[in-house]
Image 1 (cartoon, rainbow, N blue to C red):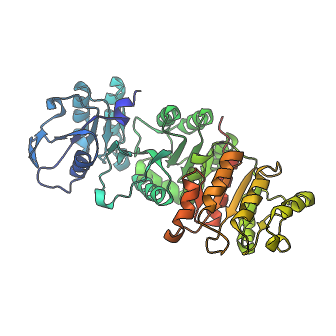
Image 2: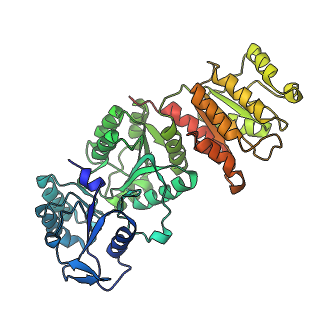
Image 3: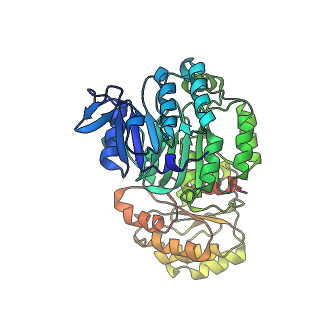
Length: 455
């Protein structure tokens, strides 16, 4: 199945625009792409006419140019004929936004649409979905532009059965500076599902990490997905819904999915080195971490901080995820102590966590991180920075990041995310070092590298 025209369209037909209701979902999709994206957009309504001076075509076949993607937002019973018209007109693919298929008892109608597309090898996303969002290329989400928070272009592809979960995650991506290569809401995934998109994004040069929100699979589909994810050369992250009996019932009514045996699925993911996120918070942290670091670690963590309390909380968080925080050898502690400022040599605790105290300077953090970057006993550094300590400057993030670029040992930072500390945070992010606004989030970023074992 060829997704080229569907994912990189130059022309778009929005089928189902209203001539008298500009708040109709199809109109929202039409206007935002017509006014804000580099695609040529055509409106379609069986009545024809004009929409803000632009021609409204009565069917796709009347459009004078080859259409790469059709966004279909009409009543479900009209979709089979419209899809056939798209195929006969040479359209490259479609996103069927319309609901009213298997999720509401019309499995027969969904099967009819799927059979039409499969016979023609015509890719379509959905039905019962938001479609796709590619930063700077296309946006088929029927969400008003002024309310939609968009992440910047970046290396993470997110495929979700739920449009709402996807949009929520994109808002968080934007807030945390995680970039998106593409977000796809697949809804009932009648034709194109997780496996096809996993293979597609496994080949995509823009994408380094592929994340999924999954509600359920068809018969034998779950096993095939795990096997495909295990073969993928890029990190794959999965957030699964339907873990409980009530959750199973909820996903069935949402996307007509069968949640399956969660325990078996979870064990299979772990066995094959596929990263399972247990909640949305983990999904965000894992995506941020693995978009920067694709190399797996064994889980031996060094914690550097200027506060004993922060160090203790980080150790607890590491222990809860079974990450090791090995005590440094006495000889290593002695060598490290000689590198520190005279003012903190006698008061710093260097066992691990390494508490440099509130009197530490930029150089103390740098010297410690450099020493640990060359120590084989740890394979990841977590630096807990408190920007209000008097000896720390806004350049420290950039200095520590340069150290990572030089030594290559993964480094994760914790910095409270407030505007006053923006320059310190940017010093990390501009150099590709992930930053979490919470201690637990920083530990999860390290945990992501331990769980991930791409082939």
